[in-house]
Length: 209
Length: 124
Image (cartoon, rainbow over all chains, first blue to last red; front, side):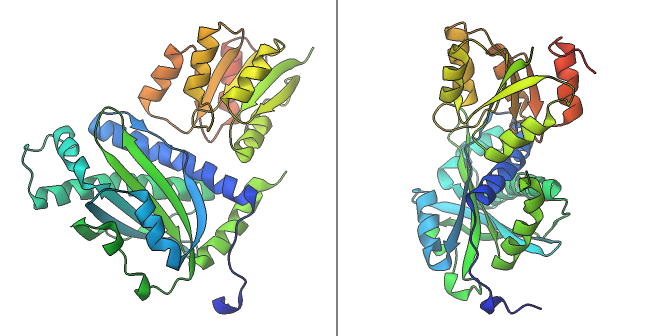
């Protein structure tokens, strides 16, 4: 085992950032396709953001994602070939009415039904995105069961950053919106420092001239 | 004479992948563009025949580029190359005048096939 604390902090060159952005672009397209078929809608795809962030900046990153007063969130771990991370899906609570309509739920949904919808969408988006990234890097990721971080809470309450062992993380942010519907969610993929070092080696073959 | 080709994508890696995926026996001269606006300026020089166009880009995205080409009746054949594999995306770009859609990551065989289908390249 390498002593992680002795390694230099992770960073990305412009080419590496571009490469992760393009890999994400392809993976989120596959995820959007799955969601589009499930809900029979068109998913508007953004340009994903790839950044190295310090953990103490993490709450600010979360805050900047959603200015909704109330959110619900699910996280799901993934691991494979020396790479580990978490997928965090954050829903603006105002989205549930439209999702319920698209999934043909009764108009007045209770918290339990919202949880079910949240899990359904998380399974599709997280799963397809993680497998999409893994597929391009030739990694078969195993995923843990999705875990609800909170329902109807303030986004800054979602994550207790004090508990974490990570100092820095690579964060990939994808903001999904659905055309003609009031549905907005953010998928945040977080990779541990070790994973980023490993992935930087994996992508080097894609960056060769 | 070499076929004048434009590859328009905001990602440097994607531009490289696309350049590498062009058939080896095809005599081309490739011009690169980072977004739709750059591509339109290149098209207006009037020397290019075919463009491989990404959809999700800053400044001017692929949809906006196709709209401008249509509105100004610019003489260029466009093949969209995108990670957005929703059926709706494919339909929309075809309505906007793209001759075909190739999904990312690009596959060399698929490109050959599309070029031959449209008589753009005759094969080896």
